[in-house]
Length: 571
Ligand SMILES: [Zn+2]
Image 1 (cartoon, rainbow, N blue to C red):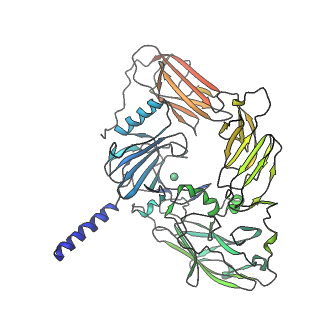
Image 2: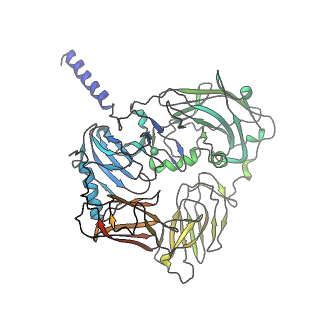
Image 3: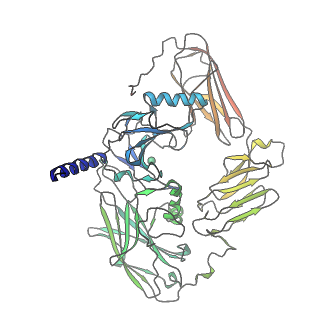
């Protein structure tokens, strides 16, 4: 092969690589972030980015690259109406909280809903059935599921491992010239596993001036009893990132803690596995979050934390002894390399060091490595090993039927199994359910007809009784109307004790899609075009304890022929 041919082929392949790394934006308006990847949320990291949609629903969504629709989920919870599109190079793009869909995708969803007689569906589609071209309009943005306002929650995932990837590393055009801001730092004394020692933490405000960030005297002095034989000290930082044209407080992308050029700890938000997401409770300073709602990124790693956001092996635990000091630098930056830095000396005062042995005795604390089983005549509780991130107070009261297991404030990683004997009463066992901290949790009956459940919260456990059916009330018309002129009709649905499990709409005794908008507690239906004669509409809704509420109407629909909206076809 001639040299110029090789150069030519090289150029072609390079151009192809460049072309592949330039995705089509999912929205056509200028991309603006309402949240970035890896933000520290309650019990999870933010696994994608939130794009603003001008505060409204119904903006067209575009496929970022050639691919095929691989998965669809329609739910009143979580991501709401969400589409997963698989692309070359094992990249999946995810478009969550959608309002509606176009063409063949829309018909497939409707068909699945009719087949299962359920608004809520989840299914996979094979690679040849629903192809999308790069830049193809296939859906509309919305506010479905547990969204708190119209936006597009957008994710990129590794198709094979399903790990969430940082979309901002994939070249979307978003202006960001603002560096992260450090507002506080905290020094804590730790056991050798990185568990915080109670009452051994100090908070220092960080000042910002024209020269950058600093602390008073550039020195942090800690008492001698922050030192121990086999434990150490570590830092956490209240640090947030900001982005041009937005007041939103974003999470940081990367941080380094180093001393004289040696990196002691590094964090980088490139990729997070979904089954690790809850370990945000180990990454952020949870105690501080509880007390002040302020989010501190630990610049150290606690034992058993499997997150893949720590690129190096160093875990950031310092081992100062009384009289020692160390010079430290902490730098935080965003994806666009806007960086912020602070230098200071950490100094342990002279004096008596701490004897660790007394902390976290198995008699007073739940220890992360241990599993626990509590059983009595009418209850059993199983706590698997590694449920706790750090040792927590062993608070257990098994006075059935009002049990106490731990402190509601302490987060847990794994679900705890609960079984309770139904309370003796004239109420059928189907009407009984397990409550944790006064909230219903999904309850089933086991082989011996005990109430069983899994909880991801510690606290008060007891048994609730639900004999009340969901209540359905017409919302944008009156049930007494004999002529219905609306095409889209809505109802309020209220369930006071447990949860709505099933809901069905029948028009002239034929099942019809009924959307459940859980956060707003309403039901929505688009009425079909019907002939001008009396029709019946009926809704049945069932809660978790088998109480069924219904709503019925009979009358005339508008004499005006109802115009069908005709969305642009994509197939
Ligand atoms: Zn989001």
